[in-house]
Amino acid sequence: MLKILFSVAGLLFLSGAYSQIKVLAKDPVVITGKLIRTTKPLRDFTIADKAIPDVKVRDEDGIIGKDEAFEEGEERILYPSSRIFTEDPALQKIYPNNPHLQSQLLRTINTNFNGMPYQPLNPPDPTLCVGPNHVIQMINGTSGALFKVYDKTGGQVVAQTYLDAITGKGGLGDPIALYDQLADRFILTEFAHSSETGSEGLIFAISQTSDPAGS
Image 1 (cartoon, rainbow, N blue to C red):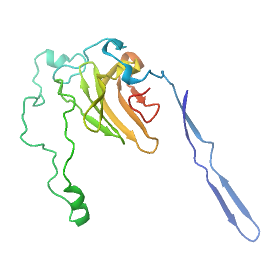
Image 2: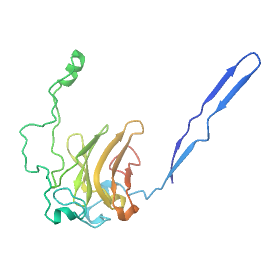
Image 3: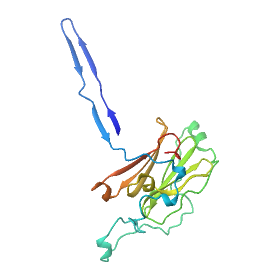
Image 4: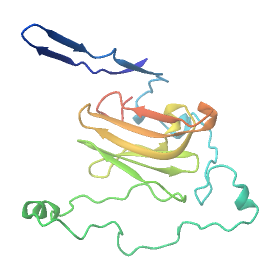
């Protein structure tokens, strides 16, 4: 059982010649979650370990499930999956007028390696997080979110696999990968399939230690 405790404790004293007023906060709010399971170390997973069979939940245009309007021939604007960029459109070229910041931004890239490739799905929703020694990439796959763990030289630590293979819960993708520097833990999330929750849901996978290839 996982419990997240949020509490606000306030104590206010107002003192005068003849009176003292003490104000206390209300009872803390307790939010309780359900621990699904603790996995074996991720480095020990293989393709044969996949807990959820491949179920196509997105088509090549990124559509989840059945699209009645599209099937009836209504025109829909598609993402330009065939577009080829000669330069990263998100590349920053304008920097604040700050000499110290300029020197930081002009540092050269010393590591550059390929991540997981386009599936193809639109939108691919790529996400990335970086810890002290590892990099985790996530991207949409046809059966939910794919993830892969690298070391900082680009070496494979955990092979590309679906997140639901380790959670045992069917996913719909739209992944988010985060590194919590305060807790020194990695967090991977994706939307849950309606068969898991009956409505909208979110699946969390949190590393048990600072090792993202562990349990």
